[in-house]
Length: 413
Image (tube, rainbow, N blue to C red; front, side, top):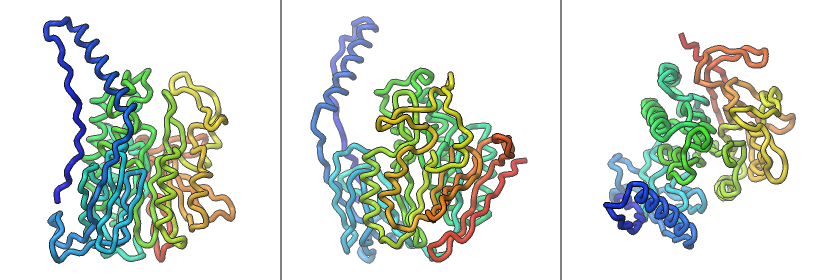
């Protein structure tokens, strides 16, 4: 069945056409504020979403009689989760807070993992021949704009030549949405979308601080009531801002580690996402290794070079979280994420943000905290006395373990 969108209807307000324009604007403002207050004063309307995850062997997008459902697939709305039955069917009850329904892509399958929220949402998937040996690319900070477009094109050609199975881009995908108008931010997002669709393999994107639309309102002049404000623009173009997928015996989790407080972003994972993560991980066997990817790092050597002084343009370095002063450029509550991962193998935590490839490992933890470099310009730069390079990292996996990691410089001519 075709996905049927859930529609919300507003009652139009009659306005005197002969009223002065200032009066019209006042009426419109009062109506918007009233509608906003009414929406948030009403109890959440629960919606039941039903559908099937199935093997679409002929790739026609609909289930035919000879196509089986896929059991054991986790379906979510970013809050609640459901698991498909033996026949591939599921039912999920949602309050509609988030605009998508998505699956944790099962191993050995590929396809579209999210769709707009609707009463009926099916997931046609294709079988994949990938075993427990594969490779993937970790890139970050593409900061797509007209000047970085040739660098993105070079990165794509290099990635395609390596025949990796997929690419992870861990945030700061676009030049900037923090401090710009809606048309400018949209242009950046649309440019990024057009570029990642050209890759031969799937591209999984994480939200970075530069994807937060308009939150530096003193510069963007964007209202907090704008429907695409904050993370809504990311969701509009790229789907859920946190999700997971399974590949080659590993469970990958895309974490949204960027929050914002008034005008300023900071590193943190909110309580709603932590609740979702707990439900997601409960569906994963304890022996399955977990790999996380997010933008602002959990642990970083580069953090040691940062000071605590306020910047006159970018704002304070410290913000109060849970009654404690915390630095904006590290995920302040990583220990809550780590507690949920528990005793599962956790070989790799991927991030970006600092624009220079670096690794850290706490002795005995078994986890490598790896930040890759930026795709963005410049090609070479000085980083606190060290020579930095633009580029990305290639990972080789065998038997559920990271076999090797190789940094590859972009070497943009």
